[in-house]
Length: 232
Length: 232
DNA sequence: TTGCATTTCAAACGCTTGTATGAAACTATC
DNA sequence: GATAGTTTCATACAAGCGTTTGAAATGCAA
Image (tube, rainbow over all chains, first blue to last red):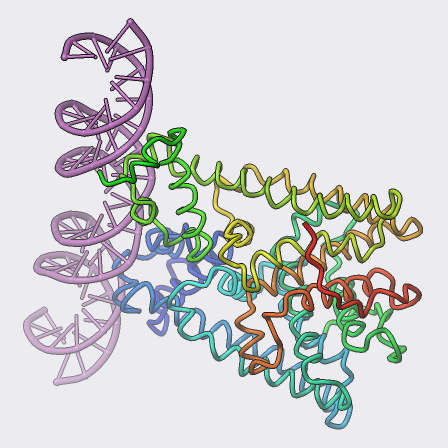
C-alpha cells in the first residue's frame, strides 16, 4: 500500500489506518516480541508520536487491532456457517460446519493470497504469543466458538457433548498447527506434503475431524470430497 | 553467606545449575518475552553477573537450556519407541508408536506432576515462541521426528508416505494444542472436558491419529484402550 | 600462613524501549 | 488573510534491558 502525494487529503484518519495496517503486517510477519513502535511508524511512513496521539498507547493500538481483526475473521466464519445451515434447512452437515470453522483462517494464512489477509496471519500471531492487552479481551472468542458447538449439536443430536467439544478442539488444533509449523512438515516430508494446495488441506482436516467425531462408523460421505471449495 | 555448611562444597557448578533451573521454570511459566535476566538471577538467588560469567550471554544460556532439555525429552520418547519395537520384534503397533510420540510431553505438561517436568513445559514454550538462539538449533528436531516416521513406515508398510507424515503432524498438533490451550477447552466445555485425566487424553489423541492414518477401516483394536500407561 | 586462580558481588555502562513535550505545519471558518 | 483547532514533527525523557567492570570474597595448594 503506497501513498502518492496527491492523496494527502483523505478523510483525515489516513494516519490511523496507515498505522493499523503497518502494525498488522509487521506483527503478522515477525511477531509481537521484536516489532517496536519505531518499526511500525517507519513502515507506515508517519511520525513516532502519531501512535500515542491517535491511540493513546502501544497497548491500546494492539487492542484495537485485535478487536477489528477478530471481528472480521469471526464474521467470515459465521457467514459460511449460516450459509451451510440455510442450505440444510437449519441443520448443516457436520463437515460443512467444520469447513466453515477452519476454512477462512487456513485460506488466509496459507496459499497464494496470503498478502490479502494479513488479518488471518495477525490473528494466528495473537493466539500464539498472547500479549497482555489481547489476553484481556480474548474471552469473546469462547462465545464465538460456542456458536459452532451449538451448530454441531444440531447436526449430530445423538452425540455426547464432550465428544463434540473434543472434535472442535482437535479440528482447530490441526488447522492451527498446520499454519504455525508448515515449515516443519515440509522439511520432514522433504516437500512431499503439499502445503500450497489449501483446499486439499482443508478437506483433509475436515475429514479427520469428522472421523474423530463419528468414530469411523456411519457418515459415508465425508472422507473423500476433494472438490475445491471457495465459499464466500 | 549463609549456605549450609553441607552444600558449600558442591562440585562447583552449583550456580550454573541454579540458573538453569530457575530459567527453565520461569520461561516455562511466563514465556521468553517477559522474563529478564534479573528475574532469573533473583529466582536462582545468585548475582546478575553470574549469567554472563557462566554462560557468556543470555542467548547462550537459552541455547544450552534448549539443548539439554530437548535431549532429555527426545530420549524419553525414543525409550518408549524402542521398548514398543522390541516387544513387537522390530515392528511396533502404530498406536504404540504414537503413544511414544505424544505421551511424554503430555504427561510432563498436563496432570499432577507438572512440577517435576518443567522441562516439557519449557520445550512447549520453545516450540511456541521461537526465539532466535533456539531457531538456529531447531533442525535437530526434524531428525528426531524422522525416526518416528521410519517406525511408522515399518508398522504400516502399505501406506502412502505422505499420509504417514500428515498423521504424524496431526498427532503432534493435537497434543501440542491441547497443552497450549487447555484453558480454552475447559472454558468452552464448561469443565466437562477433563484435562486432568492425562492417560485418557493420550488415548484419545492416539485413537484419532490412528483413525486418521487408517481411514477408519481395519485396525480394530486401537480406539478404546484406556489402560493407564506409565512407561519409563 | 602465603600465593594464585576461581567465583561472586555491587555498581555502572550503553543502548533501546514506550511515552511526553512544545513548536511547526496544516485545515477550515470568519 | 487572520484566527482557532487539529494534526504532524523533531527531540527529549525516564525506565528497563543485556552486558561489562574491577574489586572483594572464596577455594585450594604449598
